[in-house]
Every structure is written in structure tokens, then in C-alpha cells.
Length: 270
Image (tube, rainbow, N blue to C red):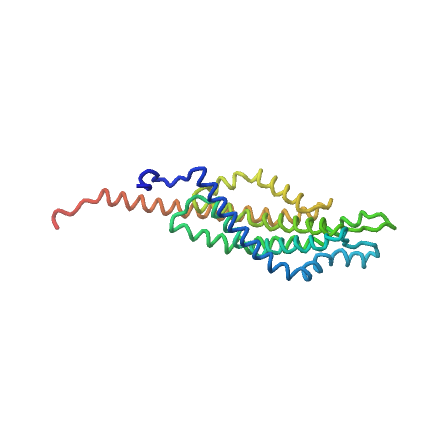
């Protein structure tokens, strides 16, 4: 009876809110579970985070160090880093939850797209974060270079960690966006021509992401992030166009088979 009343399986606003709450709850559980592991990885991660500052201070002979400004700041930073480690460790789960919420209701044969999303988005997210980490020492060097000679640059630990994580998250999420475009095309929401025609706003958004992800006034750093993002965008458009062509060939073949069946007349002499 419910299917007859709602044959298109449309969800009411209250249903969307419940779905959002459930997806958010599952993502939170995954992140908290990862944060438990992140608590024990704090020493290693914090040592890696402050390496660029310590190396630059040693090479340039400047006074730069990560500082804890209060009694509770060390504990607070421990919690923050544990949370961010949990965010990265649980990325396959919350990325899937995001996709499962924003994608339309999938048929059984289309559920494989969810698996494809996880298999492609997780490596791209982690790869983008690693790419940001590879560029990060250059960002630190560029920002600390503004320290006047004879002055000390005492860096607040919490602000430094938040700055680091912001850079890594922007890089990671930016690398996942092309996968979302391909999957939206695969489920019929967006055509390849639509993706390709939107190259102007796409390039503008890519430049904006590059500016946000590269906090130093260095056009080369911005250019380095724009190159892979632009390549991924056009790769996504190319994959979408090939998928549209494959669907068109399949529809044409089905139409031909239907016409042949409709025009078929049995041989009366047989």
C-alpha cells in the first residue's frame, strides 16, 4: 500500500532530516573511534607537525618555536590532534555517509557506485592531504620569513595545528570533488556536456580553492595546487562524456531491437 501511495519513493522533509541525523551520527561514531587511536598517536604526529618550524629555525638561525600558552593548552591540543587524526582515519566511513546522503535513491544495480566512490575518494582524499603536507614546509618557510631580524616568532600550538589541518583538509576535499562529478553523471544527475560547459566557473572555484589552500603570497604554490585540480576536472568531464556515449549507444541498440521486434511478421509459408 505504501508503495502505491508513493511510487516514486519520494522522501518528506522530516524523512530527510532523520536521514541526515542518522548519517551524521554514524560519521560521528566513526570519527570518535578514530580519535581514540589518535590519542595514542599524538607524540608522533605532533613531532612531525613541528618539524618544519624546528628545521627552519635551525637552518636560518632564527628563534621560532611552538609554544603552549596556558596550563590546559597542552591537554587541549592533545584532544584536537586526536580528533583530527580520527577525522583522517575515518575518512572512508564519513565520505561514504556524505555520498549516501547527497545521492538520489539508488537502484540495486547502481549501488556499486557507492563502492566505487569509496575506492576512489578515499585514496584521493588522503593523497590530496599528503600533497598539502608535501607543500606545507614551503608555506611555513614563507610565512616565517616575514619575522623581523632579531625578533622571536613564538607560535601558539593550537593556532598552528588548526592552520595545518585546514590546509590538509582543503587539499583532501578538493581532490575528491571530481569523483563526485563522475558519480553524479553515472547516476544520471549531470551530463558530461554540462560538466564540460561549466569549465569557467570550475576554473574560478579551483583558483579560489588554490588561494585558500596556499596561505602565502606565492603564485607558484597556488599554481601547483591548480594543476592537479584542473587535470582532475577535465578527466572527470572526459569520463562523463565517455559514459554518456556508452549510454547513448546502449539506448540506440535497444531502440533498434524494439523496432525490429515491432516490425517482425511471421513467415506464413513456414
